[in-house]
Image (cartoon, rainbow, N blue to C red; front, side, top):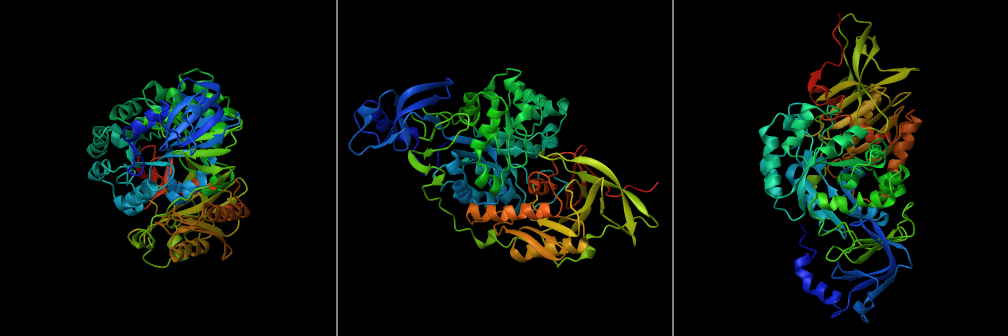
Length: 604
């Protein structure tokens, strides 16, 4: 699978052969490095790489015979030559950036291939949004492959999206040049129950010879898991413990294990390799969701590799998990994922395999970053007006829109409460005794744990609908509210706060700026990240977006929140396919049973 802008191996095979045979000069030769061969898990000293037309023609101890007067010579000086890093499962929109700006942010960290599922924009703009992401991805100087989103809505009947993705949409997209498979199949109950629509999407993908992405978020590894695997998903990134990784690999799936900005699932699962000794070829590392601050300040897949090594993984095995394992999974082993003839010339020079400093990055035979700085352009699409101005509330909101009425005569109530779990995507289903004042149920900031209000504000069809409930674990104090139009996966607007007036201020502010994230306290805006494209992304440079995101984090801390990367967890509170409790435009969802439950328990 190649895009139209980059020549395939068959297209240039004669050129590669002539260079390898010494009959023609290479475009570029990398001299005297340590060749990290991920096929054989070896490090071979004093090797050269010859590159022609963006692909590798020769790897061996002496490429001097491939070197002509016009050949660019790069001195490796004994450094390790490793394949460009691959992110096997990710959502560009989670970085708050367009594909171009995301690429600009991660290229200096050594990421040269990304497998992206743009289901965030699919929920807002439908197939046209996917097309825009796909088209900008193909413009980049690195490999950005697109998986066609499978589930918009993620759980039919439990949420309402801006657009729906159909089996016909999936079948159409399978013919696009940059599509490598189906995005994560989040409707795992649908697959387990043989839902015709879900199976039609999977069938269209399999008939096209492409990979079906998985998402099995249930802890149940019994019959439902068996039924899900039988339905066809080829991988899964929702595991949180060693047993999850083992179960997936034993059933012939790839265990995709993530280290994102807020998902820390590697340490608990990599023991399947480091302690249980299972074959690592079906273990793949990914990020899933990284926001701009992580990308700018901490890194991307290089960060994940370092973390895996720190968790006890052999460096060469960790590198296989982000190169050849990923390429093989998507059927691209003959195109990317290793430094071997015919493959795209995606090469990193680094002086240390454990700390992994990214000193030089070559993608498709071109130097794209050096010493942490990008050296190429990342072209933008001209995003149309239809992709902007997507926040439609119907009316200006007031504190009254966020009221939760108590049963008549009640002085206190028992509420079902969404409970946050730090560094993990799942939540807890909690119950809390909450006070009633003037007939309204109130949030509480008790010393033993606060309970805030949460609201989901419909923003696609201007219905004016607001769903109210409660959430605990952020630690907020004082009169504050935080609002975001990033609300996986339906991407309405989530507002969390301790005061209804502040909630109205925050929601109306996002309608005013066309989407983003904001936080208010005592009537003043503490931070704002504008996301004008679909209410999800900015086409500003990553450094600018990261600086605003940093202020957002500081504002959350100033309001009492000490959770790691709490914004990421805030954005998942409406993801109705990850247990245990979530909020949607239709009400409070118990994801353990996929049923709606009341916010306030009936009085007995």
